[in-house]
Length: 130
Length: 178
Image (cartoon, rainbow over all chains, first blue to last red; front, side, top):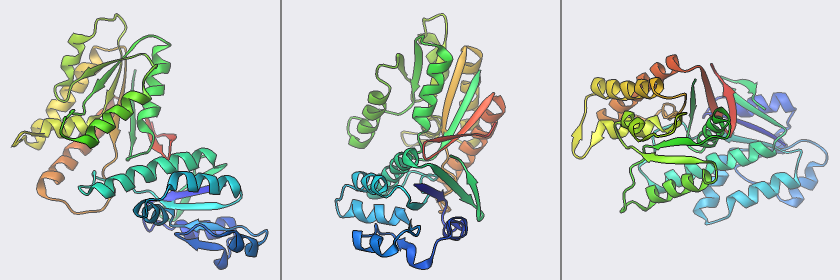
């Protein structure tokens, strides 16, 4: 599994498309693909973009985002995860935003541990940090 | 030796800094200067403190709570070898700047924090410092928060000059930047 992280609008998806030769129909926006969708992709590479938006949604729904994402990447070791870095700011006044920010950071640590490559994208340029 | 760790929320900076001071202390006891104010009415801050305590249990830390004036912690250190983890400069700066209904000027806040850090540096064998990257959310803030951001930015830059090594934590990965 590969993890691509970076701030908002830093060119993560463009970087990932080029680097990993991703086709448009193999990118899932803020959603984990179903079994059927993964079967349809066959042996091509696929990516989940905007993972942070999926995390926000699952936390709002009261889901177990941590367990779900780790079990997903373990089942799909060739997938690419793309996520915004959201922790580099002032502590938000809103309690939900604080929880979302902290849980996203910790999930990224867990995903990065599982990943065989971690790329950090700034100004459209990817740096391999693992 | 002075080592600085910087990272955002949930970046793994605390764990990395704890491992660093444990290595430097080579199995000997270490001091942990905790700057977070424990407020009985604030469940979130209590949980946060408990989480940190749990994570550093069995690592041989002696905790000294100092929400402000961290230089005074030295007086409470009886061990001959002083291996110290200061967690964290962002809290310390907020505590020095905002207290009760009072607000200290940016310049004075910066001086107080930097003098305290220098005093720790001069009186310890190894000092590992944790600070926070709070500078990249692009939001606009009130003048007090901006004053805090300016103060912490300056403090981080000055501490980085004192530091022998600096690591940035990203998703639990340490990136050496000095």
